[in-house]
Amino acid sequence: MSRHGHLVFRFLMVAAAIFGAIAVLSPALAQTGREGPPRNVILIGWDGAQRAHLQECLARGELPTIKALAEEGALVDIDIVTGATDTKAGWTQILTGYHPEVTGVYSNREYRDVPAGLSIFERLKKHFGPDFVCVAVIGKRGNVGEILPPVKRQISDEEAAQILERQKQAAERDKARRAAKQQLSPAEAKPRKEAKPAEKPRADRKAERAQKQEERQMAARQAVRGQIVEEGGVKYLMFGGSPYYTMHKACDVWEYGLIEDEKVGSRTLELLEKYKDRPFFFFVHFASVDAAGHRFGENSKEYNDALISNDLWTGRIIAKLKELGIYDKTLIYVTSDHGFDEGKTGHSYAPYIFLATNDPLVKRAGMRQDIAPTILDRFGVDLSKLEPPLDGEPLTKPATKPVLKAPESRPAPKKPAKGEVQPTRKAAKKLLPAGAF
Picture (cartoon, rainbow, N blue to C red):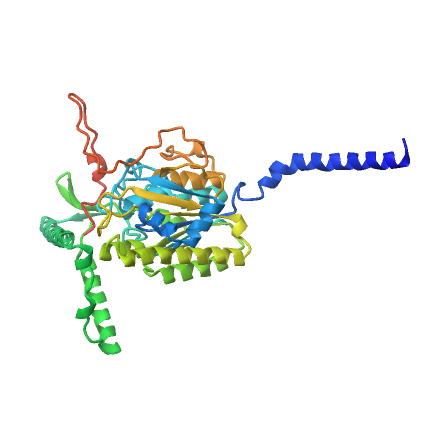
């Protein structure tokens, strides 16, 4: 063999060795991207975001952040098939992966403290240890975030009568308020600009706000949560607690009632800076879409603008992750607790939501209870060892259970067949409130 032949042979041997090494290492190299376990996850909630309206905004180019996430990962349909289409039922199911029969949280009016150990926060702290960071930054004051403890207090017959009367009055006021609101169209419910009074001095406006706040606090002190039960001839006031009371204890930061998108977003950016060097799970909740829908209606400009605002702040969170050099180590999941009744100011039956993510492994549509298993599985938690078994399944894997679709109209209550015993929630209700009055 000539000297030139020897050089060619050696070159081919070296090239073969290099390509062989690449072939061996390629699975490991792939795991360094988003297909491997993340260091961090951020779950971002757009409370009350209707899927159809979100799709319309995307078609008009109004949601560049969601569009970019979908291009990196996926945008899939999520349907609500168990639990109410409201806030308490929604975020409880998203943060646990369970049906209401397990958590005891059926709706905004029928709920209890979620049993210990079932939330994403608690699961991740147990899996990774105390150095793992859990954070919740929440826009709403009520229905998501509040942390009232369970109560069982002995009461007299006189106090029981007073409580029942106050609850009855509160229920009547609530019923009248809802009836009046349903009679108004979104346009009628919207404040009339021409009737806007002359602006008052700043000191007067401040005094009025203080007065209203004092009135709200007084109403809260007079409110009675829970229901009266009798055991052995003794009456007790029992309240099952807020759904988030126990789970919030697993968090390093739990802040709620921030209301405005800017406050939620800015606080999130501060906490990302603080915890950038530690692995974390953030739950970031924006309340403006739901608030705009209730006040102005789902088809209003205000509702649309709130979606754009949520997209803007989601984009700023992602920009912060990139600035900190941790975006490539972080999975983002954007979803909603419920949708909105088309063109209306409520969500009595609004089961169509979504999941937008930069996770390239999300491949299929699913149900609301599938979001928590997706996050836990991506973090490396062995779902087969969780007790009780999760009701949802990861969206990154083929489903082993039927993936149900929500019907267009609310299903009628199922009547038991002749001789069939209809399951009830009577026993569970003993620990549930009659309503948050």
